[in-house]
Length: 275
Ligand SMILES: Nc1ncnc2c1ncn2[C@@H]1O[C@H](COP(=O)(O)OP(=O)(O)O)[C@@H](O)[C@H]1O
Ligand SMILES: [Mg+2]
Image (tube, rainbow, N blue to C red; front, side, top):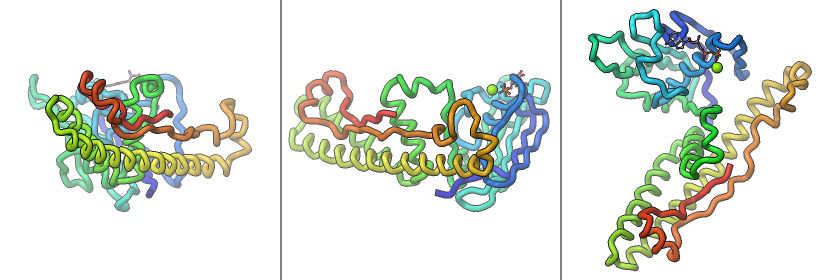
């Protein structure tokens, strides 16, 4: 995995920033400090728009625009990523009329691209924030999705594996819906589902371990140089910051589960992970 770094971040009419530019050198992690309301989260939110979706706060495109601006906003980032140096840009134009719905525009090296999905060729952005605490005590499907995003950051093949598993699970659910389904066909689909589930689980375990190791060495490296100053951090030494307990997973649909799965129209025995 190449660790992508943001070298320069330029904000125009983004949240509380009318115009701001941040230059970043070196590969140390960046800690933002400042009073409440100073604009720390706004900066991180801007970086979160270097990924597809609605960003860290899941805001509407209009809410992000600086309240005293023209209604448009832009984030541009010079990054050193998986394909070398690149400039990624995204934002919306000022609204053309009262009812005009804004669309997010994206550019790579000033050339328009169809969506922010294209940014993934350069960098992958993931976040874990307090608003996502449901991840720990919510449904297992949310945890699976988070792990998949994390693994995708280090293994580009992962989305293909997950899509194949989802297709296979849908086939099984469809076959179960039909009471007259050929049991041999079900056997074959369950066999395929189990194989794909094992592949996804194996990639998740190794991918998560790689991501965790990268994060840990990144944090230790940068703290290491300033260990003297940082050791008294009340939450403990830096190596405690990232710790992934082993992932426990169960795999594959079970034959015995056909009747209950048919009843609830879902395959309940999917790979399950515990964070
Ligand atoms: N669209 C906007 N236009 C102008 N200011 C905004 C906009 N959205 C949020 N803000 C301001 O940004 C500030 C919050 O910034 P934030 O990054 O959340 O602060 P913190 O440093 O505490 O993380 C608030 O003062 C809020 O009024
Ligand atoms: Mg904040």
